[in-house]
Length: 463
Image (cartoon, rainbow, N blue to C red; front, side, top):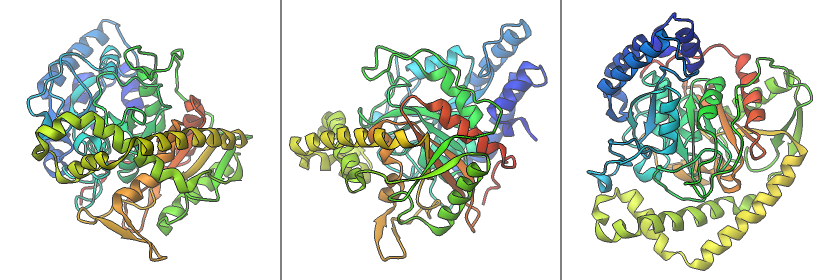
């Protein structure tokens, strides 16, 4: 196994034991970038010399016994919505040409303090307003979508061109590409990870979180990111925590909710089979399965779009009126649609969210986690715009990918996607675990327990 193939946890253990140096790890990942990036298009920019300098510094610190923790010397990538002082934050858009950040975002500063090494910025669907990231190809099949909007981050982790990465999630933008590329993606509780210095899509739905190779890796990154920052008005005042899950896979007594409604409606049969098999594995580990009815399902997508579109329109109002031609057509149309929505529409969406949060809290009193598909189908072809289900229902690809992820953004509950197999074409399938607000430890425990029953995952062979 090459160093670029190591999980964060394995690389950290090797660095701490002096079996691997940060320089060796960073050089291996940069070589992998040179090999894979021309075929995948995950990065907006690669900061190779900056990374090599940081790796030498980390190696020197380690030699002096100044070990900062498990992220020390670990190469990572940031979605190109996340400010790093002196670097461009383009949001993969011509609108941001020439923009340069004057200070670090909170998450970039915290990762830097933990010793993580920046490799570069990864592509997003323009301003995170989309579910495919058209600039980037799927790590398993270049003819298929990467998922979005954090497609670059997910492909970088899946392909070995970053040991971990950060994404943002407004309607599934961490979980969708993570599921489609066979890696782990965590959308934390709303407000747990500060968003100061992160370009917004929809302020009341935006989250920042990690994309990693394993659940334990995600826990290590979350431990570095979480914590209050008064510069983010939504930031929660919660104590620092170590989210690393215990090694014991026993789930005896844990209640796993299995939805009767919504989450298994219009889902690809091979996705349903893989997810139900994974749920059966949780039961084999001691969990008790409890059927649940998902509340207010008919309002989920209307509420998601009713919140997201007006908030995005408000953020882009100035540039949409002065330089509309610089936006990609799909994003510009969505932003222009915001002008057709009334204040009453937005208020009704807010009321719906309040009711939904209450009903979800009641549902989560009955179970400890909910297990369901992350997305209804694997990665589709890059030129596919719609999917037709067996009952004849047609759905846009974007609506299909957001459908099962949106509830966690509306309610703010944490959600974790974990790889649980592949379809007949070899494309990854993800299972989503959802839990109570601030109960990331339980999600990580369950995901880690499942992961321990599975063979180690390698880097995909490019097709």
